[in-house]
Length: 254
Image 1 (cartoon, rainbow, N blue to C red):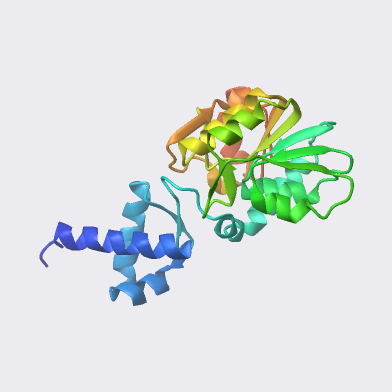
Image 2 (spheres, rainbow, N blue to C red):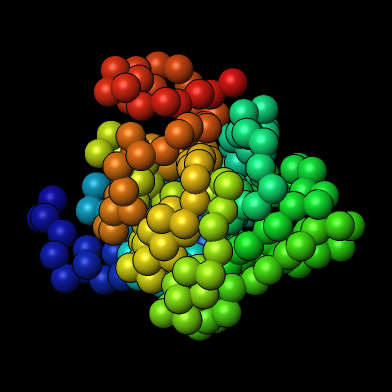
């Protein structure tokens, strides 16, 4: 059988990428029907596209990873929901005493914030969905950073938000990440990195909260080294954490 034309392969990659970007995720069956090709071809394409950092494979399909704009928080909340709940529960058991906290717009930190007792606390965030979820709770001093609103990120970012952060000093920062590798926490956009670095610099304690699927997946922009966090909370299995603990990184999964 003759080898497939590279043009046809790249065309499929583009169509798969567009489909998953629009939907957030897709199954092999969906892509088979959409592209009129065999399941074996789709599996091969998805595996290669993951290797190239174009998407993330899941059991039975793939999910979108964005290399530029942030993925909608609604899509992120839908992905691996139980994983986010488990990671948030781990973090809840390890929170230090605080009166002020910066919580980023990550979907895992949104799960955590909904579990926390924030009464008589000052909460600052750039996450619009987080504000919507906790604004009804009593006795919270809740502040949303000003800045540019990205239509699919449900967050404020940009120079105005960074400048506003200079007005605060936080007892605690709670942060998620698009990707975690032994050399650091990563994000998909420079704007997000700028917000997180600015909040980090204004905080006394720093906790990173990530689900197991975030470990060692492709992402471009490095926020900082993992040793800079007081604690990393995750639901990742212990076997996956050996390299991190050997580096002296404070990481817990229960």
